[in-house]
Image (tube, rainbow, N blue to C red; front, side):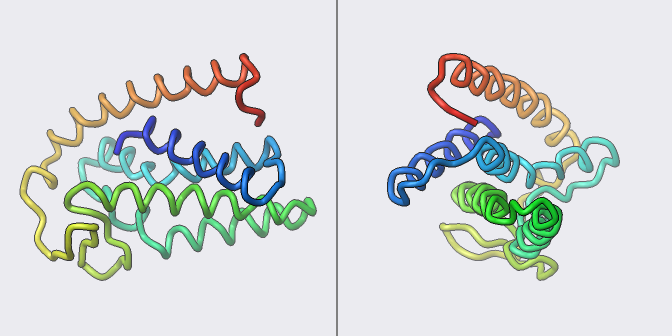
Amino acid sequence: MLPFGHLIFAWVIGLVIQSFSKIKISRLGWGLLFFGALIPDVDYLFSFIFGVNIHRMFFHSLLFVLILFFIVYIILKNLKLEREAYFVFIGALSHIILDMFIFPGVMLFWPLGTWFSFYGITNVIPSFVLGFNFWRVYSFYVSFDILIGLIWLIYLYLKGKVNF
């Protein structure tokens, strides 16, 4: 899934949360939800800069989501905003769930070498997924997708359709 898809999914989840819980998500909550929805793909930077493929491994694991949540929770607890930390958890978890729809899935229980997807569990990955050139080209498309997503969010904000 490309970042724009992750942003849209997080936005829909935020709208569902607001509808069913009767609470209004704060600007910080929306920001953390969107941040959480994008942060697992920080591994693209490592793949691009260092020429190693770690995509969908540690940063797409439940361990990373929990570490991220606790770091944000501790930071926000000092500001008496710890409730907002749950949105980064929800955003990151939504990212992982969406990526489980695309082969080969994610290393949900990293460092175990098992890939989990909604299509099955495997320990073998096709060679094109591991190739550096594949990730270099894909990084260009991801960057373009992020730009489109940011333009879309700015548009929604300026039109008053989403309140961060």
